[in-house]
Image 1 (cartoon, rainbow, N blue to C red):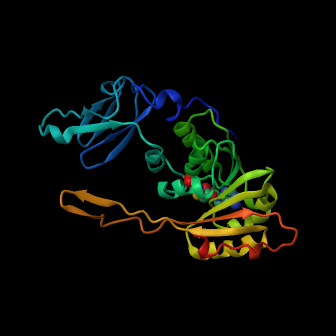
Image 2 (cartoon, helix red, strand yellow):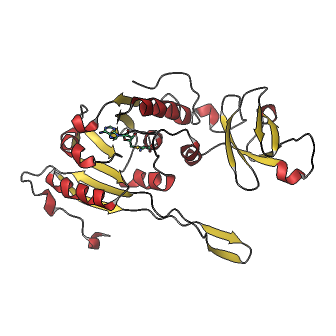
Image 3 (cartoon, rainbow, N blue to C red):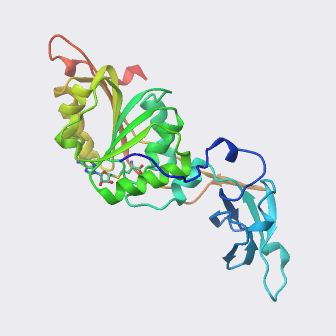
Length: 292
Ligand code: SAH
């Protein structure tokens, strides 16, 4: 399976800036920050609680403008204006159709640095799920081979990636179980988001080049501890585990404080380097707190 088709990507060059065109997606945002992702199509309308928006009023126009949601009766013009903006990659990740749970933007951003994603890096990603991490790796310029055990998720990921990033990317997805083996060789990075990543470690060790980085995303700390124990036994060193806490702030007049609510937990990010030691002493190569 590979990305094919004619879906127009959000990041295709003509959709990054300039006038909004038919075929691309835009966000409509109301005064209460409710966000609607629509695809512009001539002659179409979009219905919200606020009223009806004609796509033709948006097509050919710019970003950052307001558009009217019209109702047959009623006034209150202010509440019926929607802001028009192109979606960011974060917007798309949160809004896109999902088969599996996606990795959230706060973790995706950190993964770029912790896994050291770079243009041309050869990556094996498993499981692909809804394709959120794939999008980030592709946008960083990586060459991505994905393994996904569920065919319906693989198809969903291909569609999501084609829509978000375009089809001119190096992206292949195979329907297969990564615990059975990895065919690719001399990989630069292996990214794992599945329940038992330790079962993929013997394959990742063979598939990664020395110095390569393995990154695993896991929701619970007992899974993370199991992974950490297995890493040292499989030729990996310099293991590190972090979580990302993101706290947004309420800033309005004299009321300046953290928001009452925050996402308390998503997952733990663990990284390790593939070592190439004569003796299997990788477990000695641990990261101490003093290295921070
Ligand atoms: N990182 C993805 C979400 C992955 S969810 C994103 O950001 O969108 C975990 C995925 O792993 C699921 O789709 C599941 O089907 C897949 N999976 C679980 N075990 C697997 C295995 N052994 N080999 C390949 N894929 C697997």
